[in-house]
Image (cartoon, rainbow, N blue to C red; front, side, top):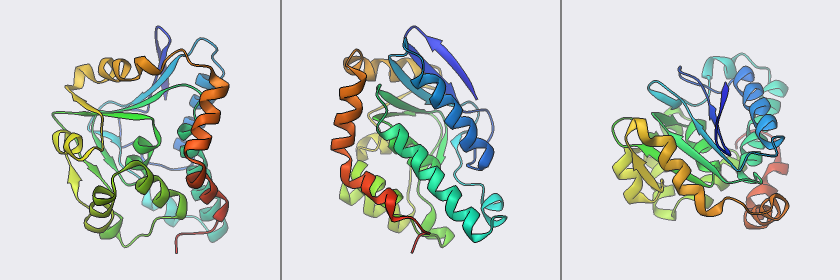
Length: 222
């Protein structure tokens, strides 16, 4: 992953491949978050990628290689990484350049705001078609960030939303062409820039308190 500075905004570029969640991806994302949070000059954070994917979800082959305890630990680390973005002390925007599937869609939902490519890419929670359940934090994130009808449709049908449909459903706050995603993301968060980091983190913690409490549930889905 690379971090690009655009004035005070730090753009985390996830990569040009499927950007699937495995141990390496989580470690690299954690290091990127460390760098941004440790940068006193950072006023906002945007995550994006290049190619056809924002994130194509979990690397299922990697998950299948883990023993039970390792799987529990990895899922916990994944949830806590998303929770870290949820309560970031600076504004966050997901600039979804392409497909956001499964945990990749949840990564986008963990941000304060979202902008989606108007020309390419789906937002989708395909767990129903994969025979997978959400853990308590994942489910709370979906229900907490989407309207109840949209959350129900996403979870129970595995529907796919392109940029226009996502905007209509309230999943994203804006759409943009591929070359304008970061610019529009920067404009979206502009009114939230310049607030005190401590109070922003505290207020986000208050706002998402019930969601964050689910992190301590532990265990596997179901």
